[in-house]
Structure formats: structure tokens, C-alpha cells
Image (cartoon, rainbow, N blue to C red; front, top):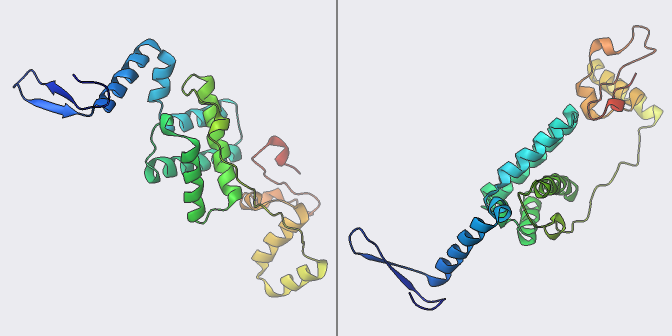
Length: 222
């Protein structure tokens, strides 16, 4: 075996043939094996997959009793992170995630047309998963070393329909569509709550109605 950094010839015992491997890679592999043998934390971090990291985080939210809406949010955002990291960028292991990796993630999602506010929600879920994995000894680097800076482009709506505009809608929309709009205006509910409305949620005398929120208990109101 020659000096570090040059080719190393390894003779195979079975048939006497020889295979040549790169010396630098051989020494690096040997060093990794040695460190894993004496450092269980390093070994665990080296074997943790992105998939496990995200699944563990989703299970932790479920264990905490998070609402249906929150669990849906976590699973959708985690699924997007997993798709891009593993399938697009070819990053399957947490050990291969770096700040440069996450910059590539942002570039990929922006190239797909995702807004910054959406990407920030995805990286926020990934950051939560990374923090949990670090507490569990599955990764070693702090999450601050990974997360890229990204401006939030969310712009809340600043205009509402006037009473006369609502009257105008009532003259052109079918009754069913107008009923949906009237419910939304009267209750101030979001689009998700609109999809969960039942006929019995509105009192017969129109005095009360129920809004079926799911993100928090306080979102369900009468």
C-alpha cells in the first residue's frame, strides 16, 4: 500500500486477481468506519434518511394531538420536501443536507413556480423535523447552519366587497353560488371552513350558524 492520496492495489484472495481503488477514497472510507465504531452518535447521524426525519416529525405532531388541519399541512409540506430532496436533488440521507443543498431546494421550487411564502412553510416543517432529529441524536449539525434566507412575499388582501357589490353578485350568480358567498361574508370563515359546511349548521331562523374550523379548537365557533 502506498502513501495517502495515490492508488492502492488490493489483491483478492479467491483467484489472485487485483483491483485498484483510489487511495483517498479508501482512506476516507476507513476513517468513516473507524469513527462509526467508536462514536454511536456519529454512526446514527450517518445513517439517518430524510424520509425517517420527516416521518418522525409527523408522528411527533400526531402524538401531541395536533388538529386535522395541522396534520394535513405538515404532511403536504413534508411530502414536497421529500420529493424535491430525494427525487429531484438526489439527497436521500440527512448527512448530505447542507446550506448549499437547501439553496438548491429553494431554486428548484422557485423554478417550479412556488411562491416564497409557500417555500418558507416547507422549510419551516423541515426545520422542525431537523430540530427533533437533533434532540433524538440522529443529526449533529444545528438547523441554523442549513436554513437559507428567504424573503416572505405574502401579501394579505386589503379590500372587501361593498354592500352594493354583494347585491350586484346576487343578481348574476346562481342561488347556490350566492348562498356560499353570503355564508362566507356573514361568518368571515376561510375557504377550508366553507368546504365543511353542512345544512344543519345554519339555524332555521337564520339567527345562528356553526363554522367548522379544524386547525385549533377555537376555530370552531357558533
